Length: 333
Image (tube, rainbow, N blue to C red):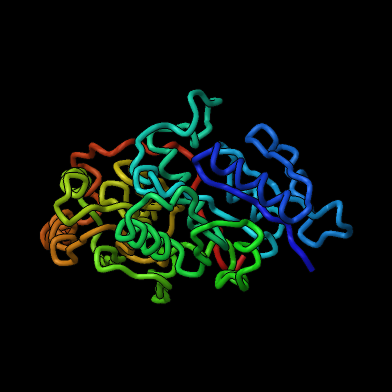
């Protein structure tokens, strides 16, 4: 049974051109989905099409909430193709620009650095990653790009494209039976399942664990040092962390390029872990230097012993979190 094919990526002209070529090659209609279409999420055909008319190629616009658009329609039943322009793939992952010029209030996809986050997310959600405009790019640079993509999504099928029909016929994606949220390399790394299909000596993924919470001011300093290249060129990091001045709250750590987000997930009594579990992917990374920089941001023995009453008085330069109810329901409810 054939499935819906979606194309995604932040290079709109190349992505749209690939979607049109794919639709023509496969003899299917082409549908465009933009952010304003999301309220009509049924625009994505049912993953179990009942007729040839429903088997379409859907081009997801640059500003689309990719996870919602894919997962809401069945996740693993959608063939998700990330289209990468080989001339500036790494530049896209380091881009500090907002995703779109203007957004509605509360739309976090419009924030600074969101274009880089969208580029990373498209790679991480893909079942297939295809490169266009690769012919003039040096082989060594292509090898780094493909290894980086494989680290960000170890299960994806990788192709230097010549023909969309051949791309989509080239064997079943390694990620085919993987839940959408579990395709990302950082998730695989935290689950001790990270096994990139393509490798390069310059590309690595490192896991950082630390049971102690971060001191907020020293964490800010550590982030500045890492951004300056103290441990190599960090491209992507994600995971979970705790900031001592905000006790009892587990936070999501997410970084792409020079953009960083630390956002609350929920409150708990410590059952979700005590400290940090973060995966880092980048170029020419040094594991000892990375651990040294981050360990210096963790609480000292005396600070840890002082307890949460003292922690909340720490200087905290990190962006404030929204005042929302983050309580996680009891597992026995």
